Structure formats: structure tokens, C-alpha cells
Amino acid sequence: MVSITEENYLKSLLQLRLNKGKEEGVGTNELAEYLSIKPATANDMLKKLKEKQWVDYEKYGKIFLTKKGKKIAIEVLRKHRLWETFLYEKLSFTWDEVHEVAEQLEHIQSIKLIDKIDEMLGFPEFDPHGEIIPKKNGEFKIHFKKTLDEIAIGESCKMVSVNDNSTTFLQYVVKVGLGINNTIKVLSKQSYDDLIEIEVNGHISSVSQRFAKNIFVICKNCETSKTCSNKHFEHTD
Amino acid sequence: MVSITEENYLKSLLQLRLNKGKEEGVGTNELAEYLSIKPATANDMLKKLKEKQWVDYEKYGKIFLTKKGKKIAIEVLRKHRLWETFLYEKLSFTWDEVHEVAEQLEHIQSIKLIDKIDEMLGFPEFDPHGEIIPKKNGEFKIHFKKTLDEIAIGESCKMVSVNDNSTTFLQYVVKVGLGINNTIKVLSKQSYDDLIEIEVNGHISSVSQRFAKNIFVICKNCETSKTCSNKHFEHTD
DNA sequence: TTTTTTTGTTAGGTAAGCTTAACTTTATTA
DNA sequence: TAATAAAGTTAAGCTTACCTAACAAAAAAA
Ligand SMILES: [Mn+2]
Ligand SMILES: [Mn+2]
Ligand SMILES: [Mn+2]
Ligand SMILES: [Mn+2]
Image 1 (cartoon, rainbow over the protein chains, first blue to last red):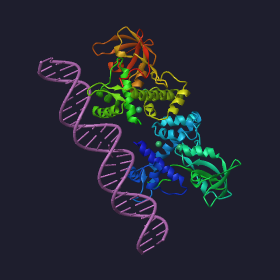
Image 2 (cartoon, rainbow over the protein chains, first blue to last red):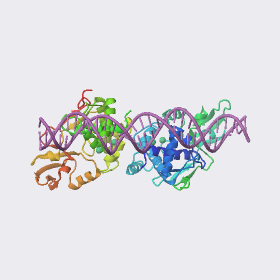
Image 3 (cartoon, rainbow over the protein chains, first blue to last red):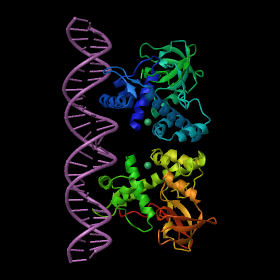
Image 4 (cartoon, rainbow over the protein chains, first blue to last red):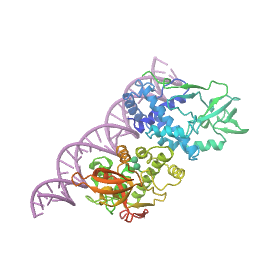
């Protein structure tokens, strides 16, 4: 049996893993920060997760999901994104409202329930934040995303998702005139205060580094995705 | 803030209260049995619930919900029954599948969510088990229900709901040919083994005392309901 | 009315999930 | 390379929600 807390840990490990392009493990402090808990707490829990063979790591080393652990994590992520889509599509929730509720709904235990929701939605590919929804068999495409601050001056990119799901941030994104699938051109960067000047739909505005680091984009001329099954991305079991 | 466990306690106190016709409080052992926990555990929690002013009772006395406690309990009960209806009506779950999942869904914190579900369902009056669904303002009708074993020989009654939500029991109910709103006539009672002979839709069968105690009915010639607002059924606050 | 049974309470203990404070190991940077 | 900073671990302690065992009060039966 997997507790709600354990599910949140495993899902976070997967998300942190996917948010880095490279094949890196996750750190204790990084995980703790992401879950808004203290490193000591994360460390305790990681011992239990290792015991249960859902993660693997050496003392003082990076943490990796095992195959079993990754399977659970993908299921939770799938539920989260399907619930967000349900709230957005069927119950007219707004972009910034869905995440908080989905954070709870993702822990409802019935497989039948989530499969029926999937069916009701017509087996959607993306959630309202532009994130890919894993299929029932656990397969999903990985975007090689960059954050907006990594895009060079003069280059164009497409916004695919966000890295901060807080209501405050999402409402700010809307205010700046940004949205999923918008094309963003980076016009200039101020060396004085690190502000980034961008153009979206003919409209020019300036955003901070902090803001830009929370906007995920794919650049126009790069390889953008690969299919990820249960076989990829886990450590040796 | 009210925890999931606390919500389950408060909801159970309300349900036990409603399942007795009379204006009686609930006992510690009775509550513990209902929640499948030990009386000592229930006793601990009741102290905390009293501290929080959600229940009121004297030591060794019967337990009553306060106005505040009853408000929370009604909200949870409303969510439970709306979710059951959603699963049954929109996702083609069967009668015996809905309860278990609703037991989890009832604890999702969003008011907007449950109101939207209510709206999607067209503000239904009854859940799939025949139980009344409290309105958003907390009002609902109370059936003066009896259990099937209390019906006298020769009398007819209408099945309105069940007192056991286990899959095993609900599937057995279906097998016996019973369902919500069926008219049941009590033909005879065996004094030897306490079996009750009933007639439903022209079909005659015998059921045990244990079975009959879990079938709620209203008798044809009694007063059957009264409206219950937040003002009724609580102890003095 | 006394005895027995049922019901409710107290005391002491466990596991999960969290905290702070002190410490160790690894990584960075001078 | 040595000093410093960052990352990770350990120890001790808290709260919630559960348990068993022993006991006290109230209700029912003899
Ligand atoms: Mn989300
Ligand atoms: Mn969650
Ligand atoms: Mn139910
Ligand atoms: Mn519940």
C-alpha cells in the first residue's frame, strides 16, 4: 500500500527528474524544497522508500526512481493531469484554479474512476498547462524543454508549460499576455537588471529572470521530444 | 481546519443519529463499531472534537453534534452522496461500486468543485442508494425510516435505502431481487429461525434478520418525512 | 437489591510524518 | 591544497491517529 505522502514524494522525484534535460538524479535538499518540507524529513522518508524498493541511491548520492517507483509516479502524474483537464474542460475551472484541487484528486485510489474520466475527456494528450498526459500503459513523450531565460537573443520559441503552479504566478502569466502554445521572440536582455524583452502576438513586454525561469519553452530548431516508456529513465533496479 | 479523520467521525455521528428515528444521542461503542475502530480510540478523538466545539456530551453520556459540527457533517454527507450520484449517472459505475470511491472523494476540499458537480447532475434529490442529498444551504428531508425486520406481518412498505454499503451486501440485495423504491410485502415470520418471508414484484423469497436489519423502508401509512435545516437535531450549543 | 453485563474511560505504547539543532560529507573557490 | 560553503545525515522530540490492557460507571438481569 502506498500512502498519499509517499505518492507525493514519488511524483515529485519524477517531475524534478523530467524538468532537467539530462540523465541526472535528484538531491535531498532539492526534493525537500520542492515539497516544502525540511531536508531531514525528506531524508527519513527516502530511507523508507528505498526499503520499499521504490527509489535507489547511495548515502550522500543522487536519488533515482526504480522501475516500480517510476510506475507509481507515472500513475499519479497521469491522474493529476487528467483531473486538471476534467476540471478545465467539463467544470469550467480556470487555468490557475485546477492545480490545487488536482493535488488532492490525484490520490483517489480507483483505477476505474480515472480510466472513465480519461474516456469522458476523449483520451486527451495535454493538460491545461500544456503538459503531456501519460497513457494508461505508462507511455508518454518527453519534451526537451528549456526555460525562457535560456533562449538566445533573436531566437523564437514556443511556450509549452509552466514550472510554477501557484495562482499568483499563473494569473501574472495571463496578465503579461502569455499562454500555452504562444510563440515568444526574445528581443533583448538588459545586462543591468537582467530583464528580458520579449514579443508575443506583436506585443512587447519585459520580464524578470525569476519569471522567465518558470516558463518552459521549446525552441523552434531543436529536437523536441522522445517517447518515454517504463523502460526509460529509471536507475538499475 | 478539519482533518479527513475528523470529517469521518462527524459524518458518522450524523448518520448514526439519523438512522434512529428518535431524538437520541450516539454512544462511544456504537460510534467505534461504525468506524471499525476501538472504543478507546473513539473516546480520545471525542475529547478533541468536544474541545473544538463540534460535539457536546457529558462524561459517560450520549454524544450530540453541535451546530458547527453538524454543519461540517452535512457538508461531507452532501459531497458523499453527490459523488455517488456522479459516479453512477455520468461514469456508469454500478450501485455497489460507488460507496467505496465516494468515501475518498467526500474529503476533497473545494466548494466550487462540489457545486459544479451538483450543477452538472441537475441538482439531484436522491443518491443511487435512495438517500436524500442535502442542499447547498444544508437543508434536507429526514425520512422516518424503519428497517425491514420492524414491519408487521401483512404490512407493505417501500424500500428507500440500505444500512450496509459493502459490495457483498449490495450484490446480495440485487440477487434477492430488491432495489430502491420496490414495494415489499411482509408475508410471514418463522419463529423457529427468524426468517422473514417477503413478496417483491410478485416474487416470494425469505431473508434473514441480519439482512432485514440492513434494509431501510418507509411504511405505507405513516408520516414519512420532515424538513431538517441546520436548526434541527443538534444539542444546545 | 445484589450480581452480572454492557458501556465508557484511563494509562501506556506504536508508527507516520513532521520539526529543530548539531554534525558529517562532498563540492566549490580562494 | 586548504578554507569555506553547500548538501546530506543523525538525534531527539512533537502531533495525530491508532492500539491493548486494566479499570470505573451505568444498565440490565437475577
Ligand atoms: Mn498541476
Ligand atoms: Mn498531491
Ligand atoms: Mn454511500
Ligand atoms: Mn470518508
